[in-house]
Amino acid sequence: MKEKKIVGYLPDENPPLWKLILFALQQILVMFPATVLVALLTGFHVSTTLFASGLATLCFLLITKRQLPLFYGSSFSYITAIVAITGVKKLGQIAPDSLISKAQFGIVASGLISIVAGILIKIYGKEKMDKILPPSVTGSIAIIIGLSLTNTAMSNASQNWGIALITLVSTIIFSVYLKGTLGQLSILFGIILGYLLSIPAGLVDFAKITSASVITVPHFTLPTWSWSSLLAIMPIAIATIPESSAHVYQLDLYVNDLSKKLDRKKTYKIADKLGLNLIGDGLGDMISAMLGGPAGTNYGENLSTMAITKNFSTGVLIAAAVITMIISFFGNLSALVFSIPAAVIGGITIYLFGVIGVQGIAIMINKNVDMFDTRNLAVISTILTIGIGGTFAFPGGMIPMFGLKLPAIATAAIFGIVFNLILNVGNISSKTVTAGSEPENK
Image (cartoon, rainbow, N blue to C red; front, top):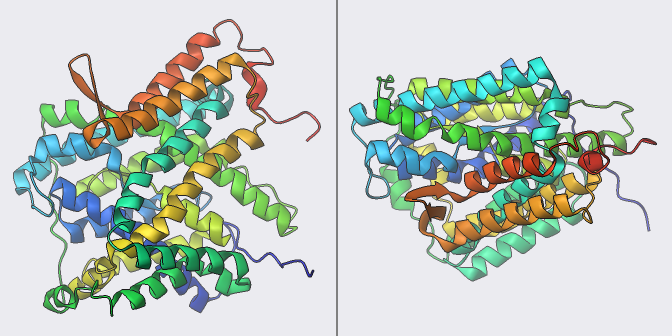
């Protein structure tokens, strides 16, 4: 059998213009539902959220000198804290400007937390951070990020199982069997096929598209000082640092694997830029919040899309960011993208969210985490149980504990980090602790 030729783009490579635009649209379709949903849940303006997402992505890529191909989108981790400030009670309700402004202040402050963490990593080095965030922790967090989202994927898919399954299966077939550029557009093709089949099924509401305003100017607001917002929102940044770190390790793994398969004879030291990533992530939060957008993070959905399509070109993400900003000014375009039925999104995300989880497993395999070591087993098992169990056992994934309601993923991440440090006191230089490092013969 003839071996399938590997086609892909590394961070410093750009496809031809027509391909670049198609790849960019694919990235937009992947991030759009989640980013818009956060705005709808927190009371922020959708058009402003889209514009802020695009601008924050552009700034992130500029700050990181186009070395980290990641897309900035609205984060689900902050929803509960932001709603506590905006007071939104139902989906799509727009909060008063005064409350959005207060929430913006807390988001700006959370960005400072990420920046400080990034600066500390740059000062003290990645080796110090590896002791705090070893592969056993970052890999486990990546797994629970992916699996905690499966409820959303399945709930969306249940809106029409037929459409969802056709979208899912066709996307997988496209990604496995299509070659070259067509294979790199597998997710876009899956969404288009699902959308077209949804039309005769009556799942597409064209009335919302035609009734939307042709031109919509994003509604910008400025932050205002608020102690309550500072205390509610800023601490969430501490919990999102492991999530962002996990994405960097995933990116490093997949980019260098593609470089090897393409015989580029070049190593991309992406994992060494963990501090730079957090600085860029924090500045992204501040930029988004200064405009009136919610807090965000680099998106696992976009990372999964890049891994599946083998397209890590930062040029594609720059184009996606610019197009997203343009879309924010056109109500019809936003409505068109938002009209993609939940079943189609469900079919796609069953695949994408699963890939996020698998990337966590890949991190631990690639870093040779000793799964027979009792310390690693204790850390991994408790992170998974708290993160996944907490997500599905309690409403909104908020664990009622000691009179507080703690977000499951954040709680699992912090518990895992602290537990790992406690278990390894006095064993910092032992083989057990360094089980996640590269073998000496590599």
